[in-house]
Image (cartoon, rainbow, N blue to C red; front, side):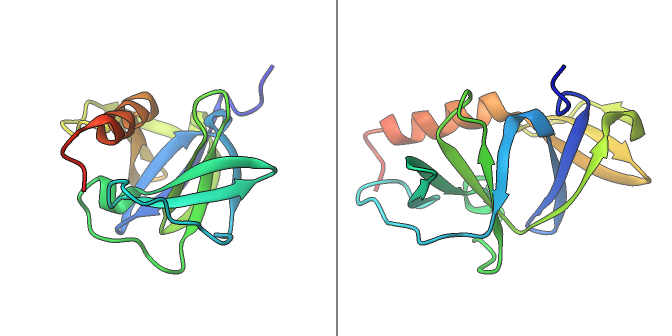
Length: 145
């Protein structure tokens, strides 16, 4: 059984707490050198070499319209089975059991699957598939800068 299935990783984006299923995250790393890719949308910071694979780095705060990235942030590298993608986040807060979720409610935000209450705090569960789809659409758009 995958131990990440019933665990969540909590992180901050623009001061708000977000969550992903731990099994969807390959690794949390300090940002290595990032190589820019001309012609990509502004939220695409560039590419990194992650264990010999090219991985796109996306400034999650910028993509979500919540301002620019924190220069002291961290990267959440998404599991390769989902996408070759790393998300620049403000900071990683903690890893917790999904059993600690006391409440769940719907979210009106496009990129949020649902809002969770964990230890008295709200955490927005990121809709990872919608995020990846939105990023792909942004790259395919003829109106990109």
